Image 1 (cartoon, helix red, strand yellow):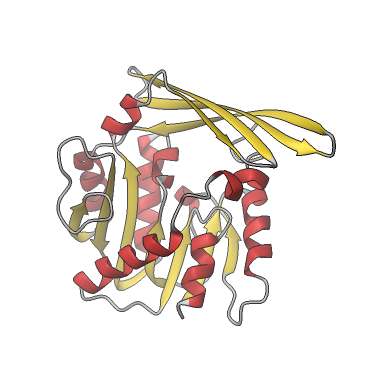
Image 2 (tube, rainbow, N blue to C red):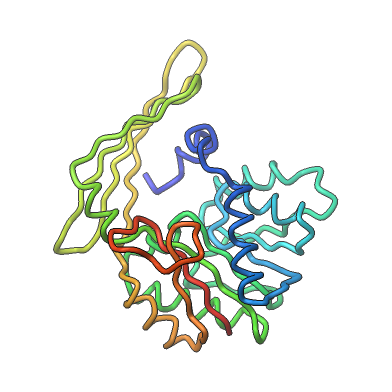
Length: 245
């Protein structure tokens, strides 16, 4: 089963601890640090649209893109009632084509790691560059190789009243990919429906992504530790990138 086909309906309940408001506040701190004041933004790999909705409520003109129709359907429902709802698009990152360029592209929650072929990551960053206005900003984060390797052999449980998820991680050193096997149990009346998905994340290094960004044409590339304004420290689990067209 493809990633997020079954998980989509349970995603928000199982990721209740993601503080999207704090994420947005940090992204805006990075924009202020770089002197950027975008009017339009693309939420790339937007998932169920939690950040997209906050961006719209903050006054940005929002486009939101994801490769999963199931996730986008939930995002669309979540945005109903907004005065200026996001415009949702179903596309893969490496094939990104917007109706008009945007001033800012944000790609959060290690979405770029899901491109397990480095050629696709290079293509995605090149497509982002082409769909930014001159001087536009790209901000994204990744799970670091240190984090992904550290997950090898780990088993995690997530649960709420409607869902129970068991996921097992295995890191393949030859492929440089972390595999997540997710057994998901979702309540269906008095019964529980079981499904399985496999997710994969490629362990990109900071240096590798710097090269990809430079090849795409980006300048003023900066890297930060997890929601701080300092460079990543040794062993950092998540790194944010800031780049300008």
